[in-house]
Length: 388
View (cartoon, rainbow, N blue to C red):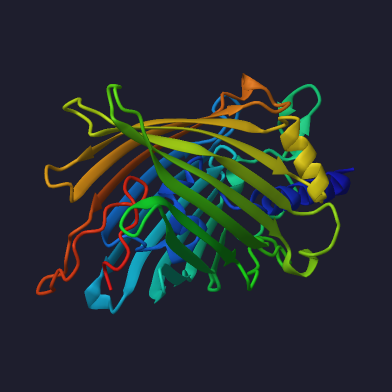
């Protein structure tokens, strides 16, 4: 009987570890984690940008799933139309018995084709995974009446699993839709990225073949101004967008089977100028997310969206504060993922807090600021031709 318990435990642990890492961590606000989803977004705006995020998933459910994220990226003419960045992602799962740290170095190269700014990016990563078996309770340790009194026959595997994940690449383009020769009507940003192309083995057990699934991200967002004369504010900005994620083993990527994860997120953010002393702009947004855990057709996706069958409603509120010259700003954002699927609100939802700092005109010592600073396209229109 104990051998059966051991076999069952090995099976459950192996499946859990594999499933826990079968899908990359995601975030409520794509706008502040662009370099995470697409390395080509690193340094899309000139100067320095730093983002710190803390995300807690389903806070009312026993266990822990928490992500902490740090991104620092920098574009300067010194780099010959290139940018460098660093991403660090920490995750803790299952009462923190499974921990992971992912460190990515980002590099992006900028090109111009007519009125369109393109960037191509690469983000090789080093991943450190840790598992603590001491916090696990195995079936063969339990007595039906007395509880945990036996010693398990389970033989733990490795407690550490480190690996390189070299091939994470992407492309992004940005262009204006012009109202006339001098006035922009809207700024559009579109791109795609491929992650984990080499599918490194991340299994803890001996002779495991637990590949990190290949992932494809496709994203688009726009930005335009709405005037409203006679109101408290003469205008505000709206930024709609969509993010599609598909993660699956590469060899099965185009097969119709039940594996893999597909996620569709879409919505809009609004940036509203403020006259209050403690903030320059109010930032708010409403998004929805739908996740598919099996192979579905496009008609199934369309039907579920049409019938408003979503997993989460994402609410965002924050403040943006600019320096007097407009060249520096900090942002403090809060997002709440309200669970609207069959899991209901009893999950407690997901909470995400973001602190971002941007310095648009920062140059390296001895360098020359040969551009006028580029205001963030999430707040202003894209200034074509600057930063070349």
